[in-house]
Length: 288
Image (cartoon, rainbow, N blue to C red):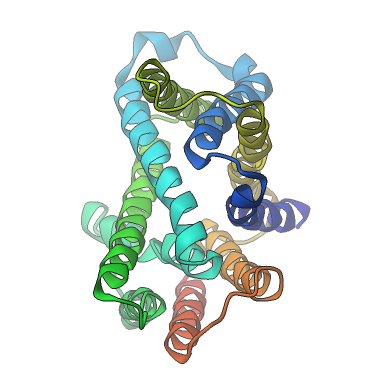
């Protein structure tokens, strides 16, 4: 159970780090770029010896790694901005409730059954995201909130589905850990290219605190995934049950941190949305 608890803690820590970055004047994009370089190094140092020659003979996985990298960096940038702008708890729910997208994709791609409880859970997931994005601010703010949360919701679901597909079809060629590490590395290279272009155009400059912030973020980013994958084997539950419990715990911890540490207020609509989301994940747990 240690792997499960540590995965929950580190996944929650990512949202907290995004929230404290502005207090230390850490540039979110620069931190994310160096975060992926740090995550790649963690993965390659740990699992580099598992790399097979077959991986360079059958290179279909590289296409999926590039696609995953594009999703990694674009969603991570948006997640950081959303945590700062919309609140940590709401951003966490939007990301974690993307499980509904993953489930629908698996139902159609793998012809899985769709029992009544799972249908209810999916509907509650959508309701939860809509309710937590409810705001009494101006129409511009509403549009911005919807834009961020909905892209995180669908994008994270597509990323989960992609990684699930890779695990089913490419695991004999390259391990899941190394695929993730290379995905992180490619995302880091993409971000580094953008960062260099910004420096050449004199729109920004690299500061040491941003590098340190990225390294600090990259370690829990990689290990949260690493421990999640290890928990699938070390915890005597089904994979979907492990994932559902982690999602519930991260949402609860993010909400608690947002309220107690950062004084985020929860309106009745957002509170109802959080309840719907938690109940939806619980139903996913029951179904599996």
